[in-house]
Image (cartoon, rainbow, N blue to C red):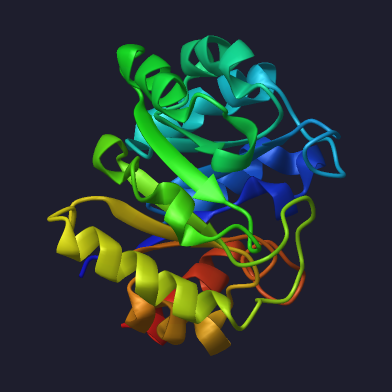
Length: 223
């Protein structure tokens, strides 16, 4: 399985955002993950389409996709704006989309990969009818809203269950992403459960080592 490392800029130094995105790409990042929060669905506010647009040229020059996670209410209102800003993939929450199939169609009609995610307390059964329409499925292994949280241990079982669901439906091409509390000490366990995309924030962007060194440590842990 080809394991992808997706640094989450939520934990980066926003005063040096462009530089840190370049450092992540130079260090071997496969994807740049961008968390969008509205202060309603999650108890925090982050960035909007203008920041996505600003970092898009950096990622595009290196051929690295921007994966935008919409932790917002009524995401359908802003899908077109984020697609125009340069998102290569847009992920929405089952909890915020009463017409989830329609929302995923809206994303795909814009030529963007469509993803779906769910909070730790939301059961996988909510994904059963929608998996055939997605390019990626994300397991939140922390409660969304803030970086630096600890991995919820029960997430491992949830990851394994989702991998079985995908495989049983012949959907092994769907990326299984995991976001929250991933570090070298638990990355191998997450991959063994079935994840192939690791979204990592504070274990990459920190003062302990360089961004590149932290990405290398994660790769070493899963390889």
